[in-house]
Image (cartoon, rainbow, N blue to C red):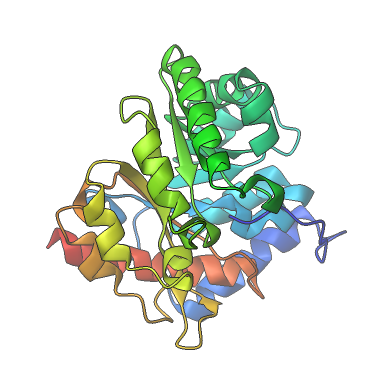
Length: 294
């Protein structure tokens, strides 16, 4: 997930158009899914999930229609990036009524810092298992000591979350893997956060974008990674739909460290057609799950 924008290309598009657009995407792909078709995602350890930031423009127009479209594609888990003025308890029921659940929510950095309960308690109402710090603005990334401060903030949030049955998580972009004063900020976070309180969601694309080795990162902190963003990269370094790029997800998820990940969420930060992208990525992720479950 990246910092939310205010783009509204779909302003004025209604509920039927959302569903219709999704159906067209599915038909074009030959993957229409109505609770049992496709690649059989329930066969493996993982259920196919999507970060709803991918379809944020649609969420801003109609939460119910967007969730219906995502469920029609075949997703079983959704990761929230804002609740779009829907009360968390109601959103939880909407998701459950479609045969899905939401294990995780991405939340605002300032709220996590200043009032962690304001993001933890709604996530608990939604039925999340995790509440994840999604992104840090540039002014929070330097100097290196800022990362120790953020590790402390995450630890304190983890203590509060523990009382609600949730766990605090950190989600990376590329900047955490760029050296500051000879050290990698991500290494500071791993070293300074308490493993009993704080977990990590590894975004495969952004590690690769920073020039990092995804496999080494996973193997270097086994057990710390409870979730992953399955995002693909083209040969030229651009974000593409899952399966259209160069990242070998089967190899990475098939390692001992990869198999310890509990939830997989596809995401595309800026798709040309959000529902088509979601359908393509679902097909690829479901195939990977089947391969790893064979």
